[in-house]
Image (spheres, rainbow, N blue to C red):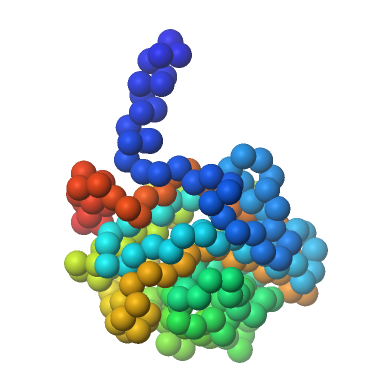
Length: 237
Ligand SMILES: [Ca+2]
Ligand SMILES: [Ca+2]
């Protein structure tokens, strides 16, 4: 029986590359909760944390990064959210609180999952997702969104997939295996000034209201073999 289970698991590990705890730099309040999870913020005001993959990725190649996020258990009073970030500089983080560790960070692209209404940032009243450029957290120049999503502060892990296809310049995001938002953007030239190697990470922050925020890893892949590449591109059709 165990052999059968191992055989069933094998395709997962031949498709992608599993993240290890030592592959990440931790910043702020972040700590490891078990072998594959990081807690980025605690349930207290003005907590902030981030994780950063130590090696840069190449935006001239397709990749798919899959992980799980947990945005806490408090719906009405929970804040502020998380941002999946691509950035040109290592060890840099943006403003916290309503900036969720992304505000002011450039060059960058952020996929924001925002759980707190900040009226001056033009936030929708609902939890929402947006793809934003260069640390601009006000929803005035988004690459895509903001789009309302169902309450995500539900104490549950949600699968998050970020897929990039450099041929079509499509950056797509799926939550719980459903694509929720995408944009066409020339990451290489319009965002990162022709420099293909960028860093990625996840940031979270609280302000005058709070939730805990966690990231767990399933698998990731950014140096695909030819088969992986076909899989990634097929996943974007
Ligand atoms: Ca907000
Ligand atoms: Ca909510």
